Image (cartoon, rainbow, N blue to C red; front, side, top):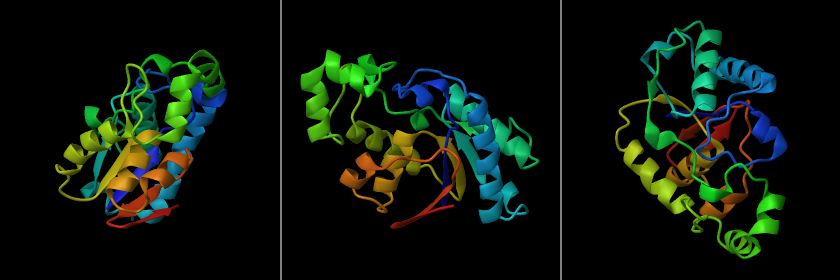
Length: 192
């Protein structure tokens, strides 16, 4: 089973800016959300079982900070987790740092193309969800047991599609919460 957790809020999340691969730290709300995610995880995974579960995070600071706060809240060593670059967020390329209204004003044709085909569209200098899913599929092949994964909204969407719990079109419209745990098995997902 996978226990998917999206990083806590950043100032860019609050402003509606696309972060992608930019390294933006958590804000105070995000730090509280990380602790809330830990409490929700403790309700799903018995504390005695946590020692046998792998913990892995995206290399981006907002995910690592969330993981460390989550582990500390659970009474675990904050730095006792793996980092995997394949869990980094979807790259939005030259759109990173912009809001959707800014993108629609500056690049209306590409923004409209993405609206028509979000899963397959590649932003300028970025990657598509198809690219992200291929990267994550290679990561999934390395799984050998249950894992707590702290990553990003795009990564969560792609994993939900890969595990068959959501269609690509549903995933593209899904707003991934930042203080919840998504328990994922083959063909199903449950938010806690």
